[in-house]
Amino acid sequence: MLKKNMFCSWSGGKDSCLSLYQSLKTSQVSCLVSSMMESGEVFHSHGLSHSVLRAQADSLKIPLLIFNTSWEDYEQNYNRILKHLKTKHHLDGGLFDDIDIDEHRKWCRNLCENHNMFAYHPLWQRDKTSILSEFLELGFKAKIIAVDERKLHRDYLGKDLNDELIAEFNEKNIDLCGENGEYRTVVYDGPLFSSPLTLKHGEVSLKNGYWLLEVVLN
Image (cartoon, rainbow, N blue to C red):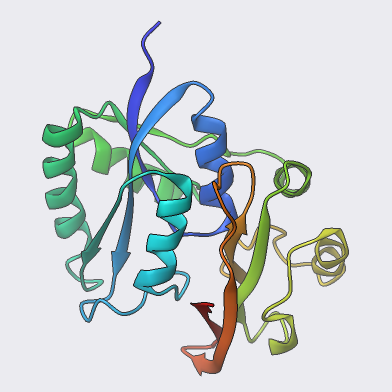
């Protein structure tokens, strides 16, 4: 049976990393796709720099395509990129890390259908405790790099995701996987990585209601 050939919508965080891990069991992932602000400096959702995303891709040994965009032109630019990738890599589908936000899953499906591809969501409606347990048991390592100031204190920034932290999130009654933006992570090591990333903590800033920790390659 031939493996499906896919691209992976890549955030650099735990959910996209576990989705990638699951998909590689049965499929080939030809490229990672990430979006940056028009300045090319910061990834939209996680605040990761170009260099950190590139270092992740290099360690994963999967090519990374980063495209610059504004929010207003996001869908148009994503379609443009997929048109190019479909031709270059003969893609069958796209890989996404959504768990329970149906509106975004539908958006991903429509995006892929525009290019005669399927959208695959390996974590869809899975129990969130089991998702996090699997992530940690597999040996992946991730740091907290963003928190919603309404839900979590800035002191969580820079901490490694672990069982103790997950228990604290459960006590605070927030979404354990941060599906509503409660927190964001950067993965720096695990079974897919040929070598771990060595990250150094930079400045902490408050932007649009989120405490953000800058992480740079050491």
